[in-house]
Structure formats: structure tokens, C-alpha cells
Image 1: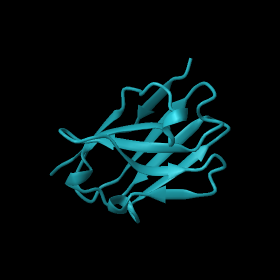
Image 2: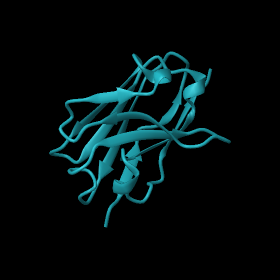
Image 3: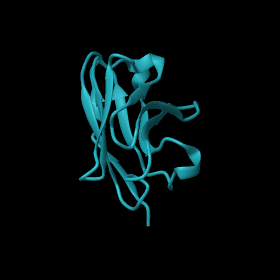
Image 4: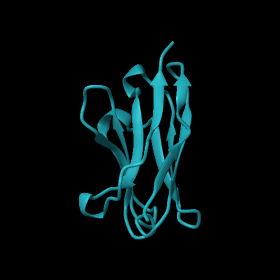
Length: 117
């Protein structure tokens, strides 16, 4: 059974930082590039960061480049998202999953990130 459990969200002031974690069970993690996604109220879910299976290559959507860093620990089946210089527009529920649709498992519950003063 594939499970994805996200954690680390919370309420933070603009300019603050958070580190999200995603624990993955099953084969989805070890065999696939992984991504962090977010969904803001009234908007579609979007991919914000991705990392290759080895962790050697990362990519980011333009709005988070230079502020977010994705990483993974293959020994722990965990993917991380370090978020710095947070902005109110980063407010969303954050999810992790495989980068490519054919490899994705069921979505987890996500973790809420709220950036507000």
C-alpha cells in the first residue's frame, strides 16, 4: 500500500521559513522522481519543485526559484522542501507525490502552509 504523509506546515510571517517533510511508503518513492505540489483555495494543484530519483537534479516553478529547495533522503524514503523568504502567495496546502502522473500514488492529506502577518 502506497502512502504519502506530509508534515511541517504551519502559520508563518512573511519572510519566514518552514521545512516540509514527506514520508513515503511503498515503491513509489525509490523508483521515481518526486515532486512537491501545492493547491491554494480556488486554484488547481500545481507542481512547485521536483527532484530526480538520485537527487542529482532539481527543478522549480519560477515563482519559488531561489527561495525553495527540494531534497530527498533515499535511505529514509523521505523528501523535503525547505521554504525561505515565504510570501503570502505561498499560502496553500502542500502535497508530495511522484513527479509524473503515471507513477503517482493516492494523494496524502497534505500540510497547510499559511503565510500571514
